[in-house]
Image (tube, rainbow, N blue to C red; front, side, top):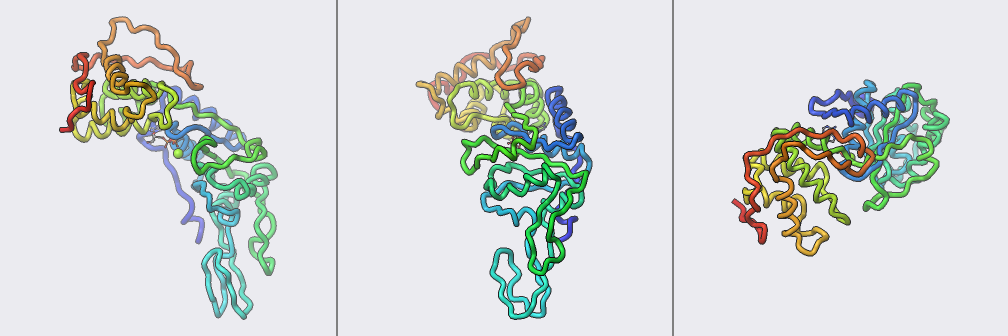
Amino acid sequence: MDYESTALQLKPRPDFVATPWVRELADRALGYLTAGYPVHFSGPAGTGKTTLAMHLAALVNRPVVLLHGDDEFGSSDLVGDHLGFRSTKVVDNFIHSVVKTEQSVSKTWVDHRLTTACRHGFTLIYDEFNRSRPEANNILLTILEERLLELPPIAGGRDGSGPLRVHPEFRAIFTSNPEEYAGVHKTQDALLDRMITISMGGHDEATETEITAAKSGLSRDEAARIVELARAVRALKPLRHPPTIRSCLMIAKVAALRKVPIDPNDALFLAICRDVLRIDALPVDDPEATFAELIRRVFAPTPAVAPPRVPTTGFAANRVVPIPRRPLAASASPPPGANGHAHLR
Ligand SMILES: Nc1ncnc2c1ncn2[C@@H]1O[C@H](COP(=O)(O)OP(=O)(O)O)[C@@H](O)[C@H]1O
Ligand SMILES: [Mg+2]
């Protein structure tokens, strides 16, 4: 395995949405990385952590090594292991297998992705790193602090044994999900202490609208209605599975593909919203009545002078950029199916 097979050359994606909110965040994070500090985006699913990590790595403009947290990881999976055996009589060369041979076997050091990144000064993206067990991630402590990678000793003491000095251009970007998520481990404080953590509270409304429009092909006005509806549902706490930007994208992409109008009188549009937003699981007495009320609100004619928007929750609260929009053609009459399930076409 050579490093060409593990490193990627990322380019900024053309469909990356850079609203002022995103740009400010990316710029701050890039400043930390440039100063040599690892950056960590923490937050719930769908808050844009992975996308931002990839975008930043593309801006750093070095080859990128991508790791995904995994409960099965051990440190040797991250840094490499005795993968190959040069011998006239190789019995087995699978990782983690017991190798028995009567001949003397010279072990060949084969880099794994973390070692590759440290050795060549690449950018590491360790996505959802807290899905790996904390002891597997201990190897990162000396990498981030002393900039030394302690490689496991190899019998025979050749290639790869002993500490490796981390290349000065090595950079690390981490993402993590909340600890209450299934399959997520608590991160050791010492590791968190070595990185700059940015809590991702979710995109602001303008950014969600831009992303939904850009990735579905719907107009900004149409995207804005879908986002407003999803955010209204999200506000109905406590929800086990609050709708995310992914929910907005699902509604928008299906509607665009099936040419379903973003219209409160369209039964299929309402049915898609019900399914994706899991209206039947809303924590209210009458989910259908609540849904009808939210639809009415979202599709109400826009007043001539828009009232000031109430800042949303999350750390982007003071940076909400109002989205100018014109009323859609649809009327604001109560949606059919409001008292029962709409019929699918
Ligand atoms: N700045 C952005 N530009 C374009 N699409 C984005 C942006 N941020 C997030 N998305 C889209 O939103 C969805 C969720 O983003 P993602 O980065 O996967 O979230 P997370 O990693 O926090 O779960 C993805 O479909 C992603 O493509
Ligand atoms: Mg992600």
